[in-house]
Image (tube, rainbow, N blue to C red; front, side, top):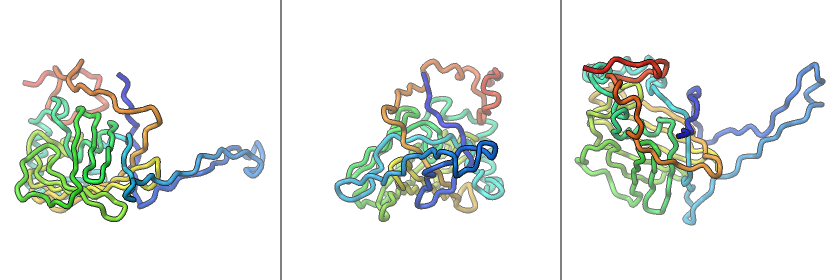
Length: 272
């Protein structure tokens, strides 16, 4: 089955607008001056669509590059901000825990948003849904003024509530599982004390910007954040069914800790 993953890119610094190059010049000195060369013009960016109530319409099919390791955006890496409990949890994930995605558990947040697998957003005035091709699952965020519950039931995606901050959609989530869930593909942990704030906005019709802040005082000594930009999928491309364990050739050789891409095709010894 063809996967529409995008190759990893360098970290993207998100601003409240995304610059689009509208024209480029081709040619070389041997062929004459640049002014004499024809220009290849890209279509100008289109404004983001809006809903009947005037909100930016985030609906659409979106894709972005895989971000394997979230700590590349943290000076010194997560090692610099681990608490003793966080360092112990990371070592446990790395040496004694099977990748939760490898056994078809939900990726949760923030991992689902950095997986490199496409997703769809469906927006209505009182609720916004994220439909994930990854694990063929979803989450539904109420936008009706409610507050986070005091003691939400632990889950992979947490309990979310949403609100608009002008043209930015903000999701606050709490109540996450501590075990059987990783922050990213490199086994970095999160605890049940984690809270996540996501900010989503659409700077133009073809891009969806995302900024996320993670606070987890049990495992990390300070909050950390990252930014990224998703692209709208070409017309005609949509989500495809993802049956996680169908034809899973990796299941017999899954070991503990993260799965390194460079040894993906190298048979691993069975776990004991």
